[in-house]
Amino acid sequence: MAHIEGQAALAGAEIKRLQARKAFFEAVLERVETSVVRTIYNLGVDAKGRYKTLEGDTVSFSVRRCPPTVAITDEAAVPVAYKSLSITLPAITWEALLDSLDIEARTKLLDEVRRPDASVSKTLLKAAIEADAPDWKERLREAGALPVSVESVPGAAIVPGGLSLVRK
Image: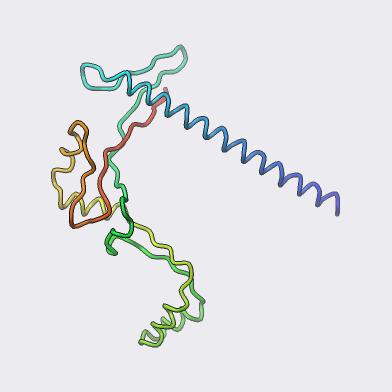
């Protein structure tokens, strides 16, 4: 049994070592990809307005535009309509909630909620910003474009998409 416990401990240590090695190589890969994208970006665009391709003997690199995305600038300012909430509570409290939603049960429920976890729906935010700013695409296409935000949706904006590396 001691031998098997030792083997299990050794396997656990090897897993940790390999996870650290994997994380190192993933970080290196990300830095190299960022460097190649930056190099292609610095080369500028051709006559058609497209970024140039880096040609090699065995591989070529190019970039493509990523679609615009929503950036949360202030999560606390985002209206509740665009958030969802996950809570953990005892099962008996859940049953009490289902049986009765009077003031007493509601108070007990709020007292027993643990680890609230709120998340923001970027899809709903983007739809709301697009509805209030119909010219958002044109505004993002302008040189030196700023994020597109609207007063009706505080704490969020549509930002231009970056570039992603394409390896062929």
